Amino acid sequence: MKSILIKDTTREEREKIVHQALYGDCATECEFCNGCDNAGGGSIDSIYQPYIDGIKEISEINAEYSAPFIR
Image (cartoon, rainbow, N blue to C red):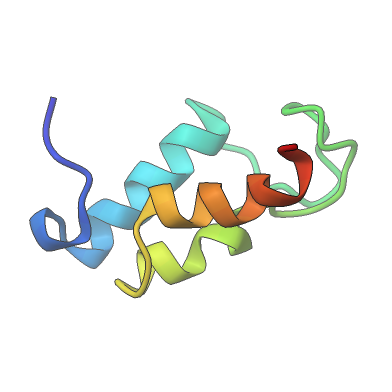
């Protein structure tokens, strides 16, 4: 498996990594779709925009998102 670290990927690769991880092979637009159990809540990939932009690693984003739920 290829590294998903920012230093080892291009922006385009990071976009594909995020899309594949969140949506799998789903090719539909997210507007009003609940195929991923998001109940039509729209795109959920904005949380990973800092990774796509090369600012934060996925592990950092996941840790920040999970922190309030960890006791």
